Amino acid sequence: MELTLDELRALTGWAADCASRALPLYESRVPGDPRPASAISAAREFASGAARTKLLRTAAWAALAAAGATSDPVASAAARAAVAAAGAAYLHPLASPHQVKHIVGPAQQTALAYELADGDASAEISWALDHAPPEVRELLRRFPPGKPGKSRLGELHRRLESALRG
Image (cartoon, rainbow, N blue to C red; front, side, top):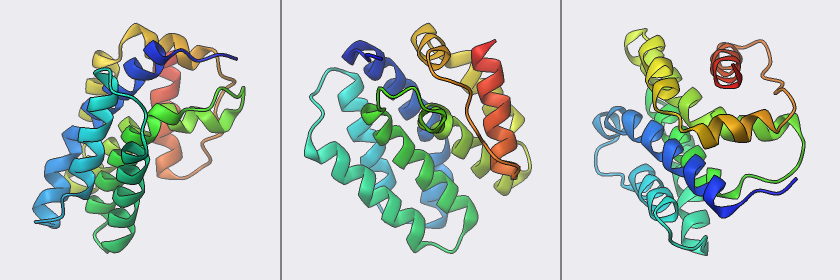
């Protein structure tokens, strides 16, 4: 399977838009930590035409460290959305169910963050679906169905994947 830079840029742009919706949740709970915002910014730069550089990967790893450094589950989910946004640029061209997590992850983690914060994941799922560019839907359809598991996060994954494939 081949993935074009244009496809990866469309996916990463959408992923950054999804993750940016959860960023205020992180920043309100962990003020002064720029790591998730930096990951989203790096993702946006790639989506806008910048090269995939070590900076993008480093920003993703830093946001992952931020997710692990907080005991606040809302902040952790919001930071993981940022990790997934930056990581979207590195989607592997493997026909593997695991890769589907990399496609839906930013929207999934954003929905989880909002659910943990105020109980409403549906609005975020609707937003993500309404704003998904055709390239994201077409890209997802080239991968086999994901294996999201039976957790609440898995349920959010199923909802997103099913609707995006539809």
